[in-house]
Image (tube, rainbow, N blue to C red; front, side):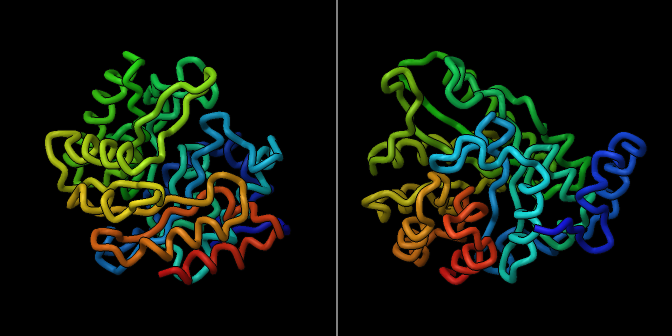
Length: 297
């Protein structure tokens, strides 16, 4: 892919020089960013690209364990995805959001800051998902549109209680700023020493029910959930707006597309969140993969 920039923004190849010589430009460009008008769901269903995996040390896609390791290529793919008609915005940790802001590709898009990145993938402390990235005040100061938290409840791990408390605090703090709180909840457990999300209908109903009650208000809370068998029961477990997550396994994106098509018209579903498979599709065609996700709506 060629070196690209957005609407008059910095070029990808110049990002490091800009960061080294003019770090204050990050805040200046963020202050001037044109934000999307209205509430997040006011303009119809959302298509959001998720780009926060590297901050948890997860840079693999499928069998390629370092597919996302080249940051410039990663940003080029994000720029292509965000330029496609119908794409609403992106979820990312501060480094990615700031790069995209400097590139000028977030004007008119939702920019959602990922908050708890401390539960590094594959570690013994993964459930203890500390808030090591954005906090609500920084999201507001950066003029982002919301924050995203990941919540994994493992009944056998006391660290889940700390994660619950921290996620509830983030939801409350974002609401005080009247900013979107995106919660991705799971019931999880250790299998052969690794933390696994339970994707049964019963587990997802429990996760959605817990997440819906986080914080002092749920007025600004949205939930991100995968499509599971019996999805109708998951959707009816809450009145909060839902985003369907898929395409993060590294497999053929058609699996995610099929699940979205089955669930997108259920009451309460307000859009989709496209994972890393749509940035790194098997055939390499990011445009076609993202367009296929948009077409689901």
